[in-house]
Image 1 (cartoon, rainbow, N blue to C red):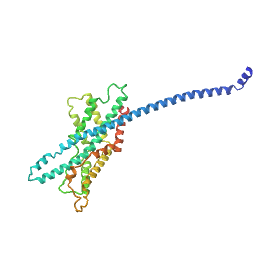
Image 2: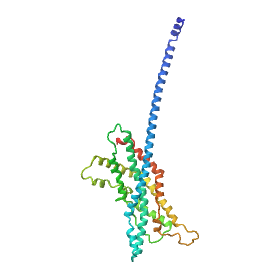
Image 3: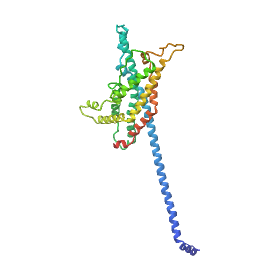
Image 4: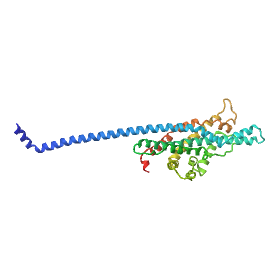
Amino acid sequence: MFSSVWNFIKRHKKKIIFTGALVGGVYFLGKYAQKKIREIQEKEATEYIAQARRQFHFESNQRTCNMTVLSMLPPLREAIITQLNSESLTTLLKTKPANKLEIWEDLKIISFTRTIVAVYSTCMLVVLLRVQLNIIGGYLYLDNSLAKSVTAPLTPPDVQQQYLSSIQHLLGDGSAPHTQLSLKQSLSLLELEQQLSWIRAEVEVDSGRPLSSYMLADADNALADQACGLTENDVVTIRLLNETRDMLDSPDFSKVLSTCLNRGFSRLLDNLAEFFRLPVGDSAPNAHFVSVLKCALQINLLPCLQDLLLNDQVKEFAANVYETFSTPQELQK
């Protein structure tokens, strides 16, 4: 029996060796494939967890953005009232002066200008804070991700506070653009829309001043107060501000801001249109001409703000900013 088996092996030696090599190769190849599949699955699971954590951090950061914008509305309103103060004129009117018609016209101009400035300021506030808080958010995500390999945080709390305080430029010296408009006559809704278009052209195209200049102080002015030397935190803050200026000068930012302004003024006109509706049974030919002052004093910009916070282009732009500053590649730059 053994001799017959041996003879069989000798006769088919090459086939047996080939078969054995093939079976062994398949076995080890299978083991290698299983190892690679496990590695791929582990890598995919790690990336999925990291992406889920990153997405959760981003969404949390957007909620922070929204809350911050809402918290900034009272100081923004106060800044506009301070810049365009009408209380002195109102007080003067109560004294029944001889030039009360002139004062009344000035009051109308200030009131309407407040409304225009409020639209610009609200739009600028929304997009500027989206940029700033997503830059900070991206770096905070990196701080958390690289905590074991990086000893010092990329954006210490003091730097964050110093950086975000730059919003005061918009609320103070920067202040949204003012405009002068003659309001000595009542306007139809169409005429009012034409006036708003003219104002926007003057501010956004013909002024020769980019809208970003209203949002952040000029870099040279920002450094002027650092005559005694720069601390390490100052250097980091200046870098953040320069990165913010780069974002504000980008075509994407201009497009998003323009979209917000279009939406803001569209909402403003929708609100103003309510004052031009004819009362039931009123067929007076001039009933649709109304006082601009009456409109300006009763505008509610909160619905406009809600539109801006929920705008898809604003959300997409915020995601792009966060993506840029939450990747390790940004550190290599």
